[in-house]
Length: 404
Image 1 (tube, rainbow, N blue to C red):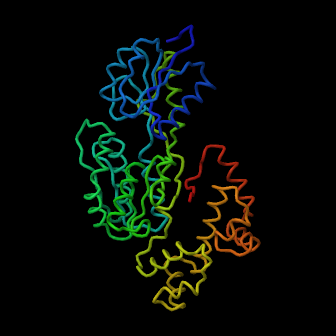
Image 2: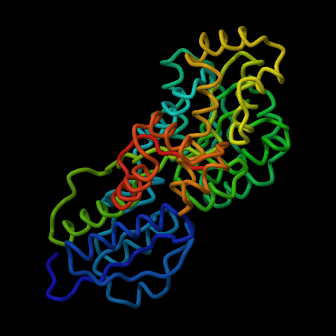
Image 3: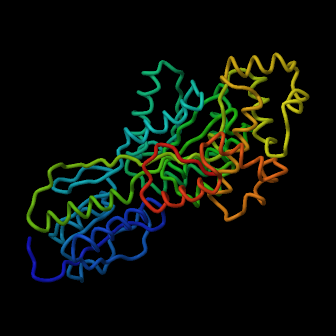
């Protein structure tokens, strides 16, 4: 459908979530660089209906979070529509969504690399994205021949997603009871960051140590939500901006009379942002796990191996042997890795000088810290900060990133 006027594109996408905001950014990027569109949008939530103004305004195309309540009003517009919610299939409406198989794989690999060999999943029943992530994660765990258990909140088909999520807030006791049945340590994949916050709250009710007893990873990498979690929540970062850009590209083709090549396009996630909820070395040895927890909590206070020996029933020789047998390195190296991780976080998140950072990482002199940092990372602290900030101005491509 060619027009002689500037196409007016309605965007029915929420701004209440990081995924929606990033998607809008991708659509905007396409509109600015590849098409001459006028974008129409108003603030809305995930389950908002079709706004009244859309039927009174000339609209040439729509990118929307389509569901059973909005499909008919959108069809009545008789313009091309691209669905970026993908909760169910509607004839003639192409879809762009996250690749939930790859999302689950990224979460599984992250937990596996941290030593977890028992796994669990917690989601929202009847939420399509949650069901798909559960199925994919379950298959990955079974292929690895590991233990698996799951928990889904009560729900019913057709219930709005926000209602399902709201129900998760009031089921804390039953969720805490289920979490208490998990063997330690367990790697827990939650369907999204909202569910992750609910799980972490329930862990506190059940007095479950995170990440030592249960390591938790979510999806969406909503920085605000992940940061208010206690501990901060690790999360798979989807390519929401890429999904928005691709949706706009498909719509542009439809406006030109082209038929989409596929009914559904799945966009691979970008990376995992590691925060405190999975920052752990998962081990079966209870005493070794206790020692690792002590190191993680106290390494930046300037402790040494002698201090570690004092809090364990193991002799220094036994402690050294267990570390080498289970983790492949020494207690001293475990202390150093924890300190270096703290330095990286401060270099990334602040403008503090190395002299200011040194005492916060357990070092008296910045020179000794600088030497250790370069030995462990291959870069001087200033080089690391410069390179990270330069990379952060482009799309992330690594599988794992680390934050606080």
